[in-house]
Amino acid sequence: MSDLIRTFQKMLTDGVDISWMGSDCEKHDKAWLVGLANLDNNDWLAVNQFTVVEDKRERRPDVVLFVNGLPLAVIELKNAADEKATIRHAYNQLQTYKDQIPLRRFRIYVVFPIPRGPTMPIIL
Image (cartoon, rainbow, N blue to C red; front, side, top):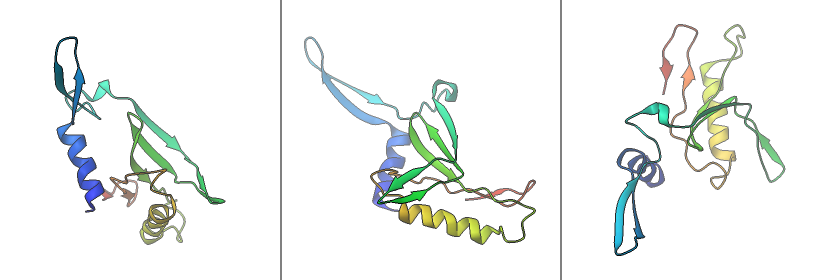
């Protein structure tokens, strides 16, 4: 796991220390990127065909899941009826996104779930 992902994971689980000047003294608290105590307090968004264009190259993951504006998962969907749509192909497509979507556009890839079939568990 890269240092960037470790740092991000720590910020997600432990919060971010913040400081500010109050009216009479410096104040300290934690800011939470994701409200884990009550998940309904978060802003959830699933974007179908999320498009990123960089250097005249266009990439369009099938689904990107955002929580509070942070991209936390990229899902590559494959047609189970298509014999050419294999788990290996989905994995390779996710690696392409990881390599070709610039970090400054898409800082963190936390999860790359690959559905194995309609009743099969997801591979992470």
